[in-house]
Length: 285
Image: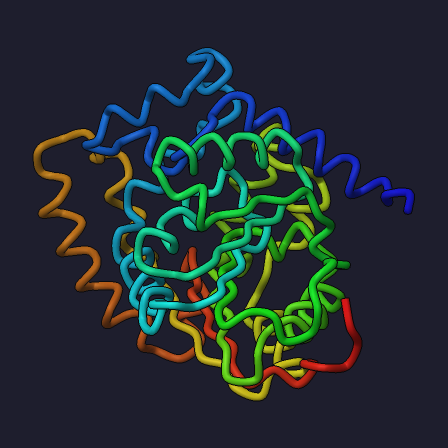
């Protein structure tokens, strides 16, 4: 089947990025684990195409919450890393005890990176990585106990993605998503001022709370938490000794601010859990 033009552009964009950073892109700016910098193939291209990585220095709390959801009950599970990129989360799921982990992505470069990373991590017998269209997967209905998605829904036709995710998730399974939000005008301004960092489709389809709640069409249970509003003020200090303390203080402020209805819409990141899929068994893959 011929790919739509938007998907071809997504492949081109992703292939370029995955050729520049072959793993751990969210740890390349301010991580204490400097060894991960070996995955950067070009410092100049990294500085140009990954200038937004500095913001991910503050994501410890959202990542920790996501991981608590992902790893709960992971032992023996069959898991899917949906739009897996370089495969880091798939590999971590395998390390945490999943029986089988499949990662899919439309980017051939990403899939090759993921396979190599799995071999290096010693989990290639558990992990399988496939080039596949996320909106039309080749899996049978009700295949997965757990599906992980990170920063991919805004690259996709959302209604098609939710329908497919609902179909391939087991009735008792869970879908864990992490997405940035579009409601904060300053964050959205930054996105529009840096068009080289993302595709036009991506900018125009960043999720909001209404889009997150639209998943109720395909899932009966939805829970989400938002993260990182005041914490964004810590980004300029990420390489200073005061950073960890400042981030802890601002995370405490965020716990108060983001408990306020509507104000939580201004957060940067949401971690979402969908359960009880309505589409399992609708059609076979």
